[in-house]
Amino acid sequence: MTTAVLLLTSGLIAVVHAVQAPSKQVSAIMPKELVAKTMAEGKNSICEGRAIELLSLPKATPCKMIEFPSDQTGDGMRRSCRVLVSPSDKTKSAKPTAMVWSSEMDDSTSKTSHFFKLTLDGNWEKSYTLRIQRDDAGKPIDSSAIYSYLDAGASKGKEILEHERDFWLKGMYRKTQKALKERR
Image (cartoon, rainbow, N blue to C red; front, side, top):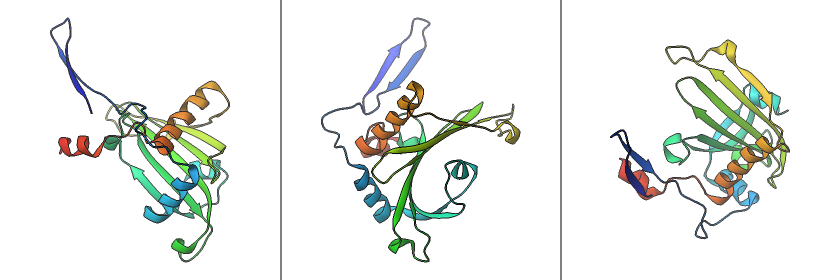
């Protein structure tokens, strides 16, 4: 990670942290490799909630999940990759059926989340955006929740989906282990 200190004309100092940029050193993986990694290293979880229903997935579907907290991403977004599995008493032996990527940007005025349902080959099937406003104290206003269809074929949808593909498949927008150790 590169850090630059800039002296602004008003006399203020800004510290800029560079995010991992695309490079030849970043090794891309295939969607099936991400599925295998999530199945092997992910924690057992249950997919539930309104967004899961809007993605046309059954309620309380077992899954394996890997997460990246916002402090481990260069773009400040919290992310998760869930591999849904066929209902079974033993998730470890269950068969993967689909993948759900989610990303969340949270600030003092609102929270915006994107949910993507993908095939195991990484093909887009369906996606939604959730926006929740915050009150003056910073608490979510439940009645402000707005779910909207995110068209991955439209320019904005393509941009968001490609950003997620870059994160999950190319390893971009991740802070290096060295940078994480420096922060501690």
